[in-house]
Image 1: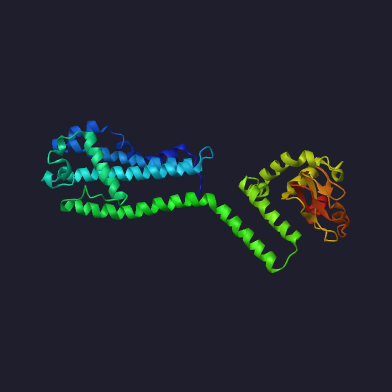
Image 2: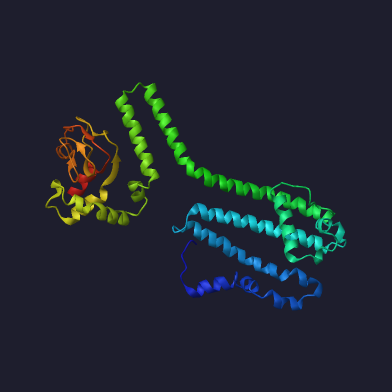
Length: 353
């Protein structure tokens, strides 16, 4: 139904009728449960396998960490891949040893051929390391040949384990490729865009000044994207109420000093601030061209532009917008500038409302 349920009783009943029984069983101490098993099964700890049910919580934990802004996504993802690999290797090593330990002829097993038929008498650490060693060499497809399946059971398990490794290896390589490529994909797209813009300028024989403006604008866009300065893109992704509050906090004091808005009500000023679009311009780029149609005017936040010369808090292009006549001047940036753009139609609609 996609409805949020906040009733504790309904939540408790949902949990009790689904995963509660499995969670309780997975917490039963295996040492206590072994008393009810035949003696020949005590060494295998089959009841411990019920604890694997808890692994679903590990997956949910990593999912939460990947979305948590306090943790680096790259390292969380790497940790998850490492844990998946170690778990797969550990399980395969345990199954390798289980198959060998249950076989009727200890000498005709993979571990018996290496450690002898009395491999049960070896220390637990030696048996575990040997099992993990063969599991890892099989996973990595190294295959030194010192350990290999001897009987049919081991061969059958090895076949399925190697088929599983094909999928696991593809999963690991695919994820690592995405993590590594993600860091360079933005630069690659930037280089492709620059190359396309250069080819376009050369094909159409644009003058050097226009070519420089094109490349400067693309470089500035890449810089703002890389350094997290996509102010307008961030605001556009938010609801209007939050967007208006942020714009009010950032630009209200500046708008209040603009001569065109002196004496207007706070409500009108708040509406105007909410409709402003923040933009960045590189040095020596034309913001407004003389005699162009009066569609927008700009308020300078940082930097400086040449019109006479405008500084922080000054407004540009307002005469053409208010009088509905072609722009009187060409306005060009002197250095890197941030400006607030307000569309003429939006401005007039707010005034008339």
